[in-house]
Length: 169
Image (cartoon, rainbow, N blue to C red):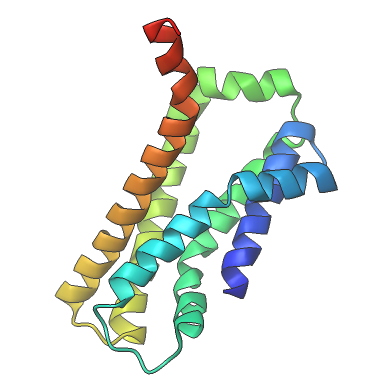
């Protein structure tokens, strides 16, 4: 549980660095709360998948062990936030429009996702004692539940103004 809270706080710190170039309590805490749906959905998906395995450890202990799979994402986010903290808001805005996103950030994020997925597989195989085929299935199931829910939540929330605008409300 401690690592999950720490990851939520890391998300808040990274957002603060990207949007203002510094860590401010208002931005860190607000961003931590706003982006807490990511670790919350991950914990929920983990709880669903973990129920299939018999573990001798507590849920909190297994969750902390499972959280090692977030380390590649944490390194990626810190590096991204550190780089963004040296740029102006206009330069950061161009990241999403420029080929930087497709040419650089997308392949790096794909590599981070693969490494993180491998660590999840190792957790299910080694910590929960699942055979490789079941560990693969558990890791993919956890990712499918978590990422699908996160995409629905994010695009449902962020996309709602576009829906309202298109239907003319």
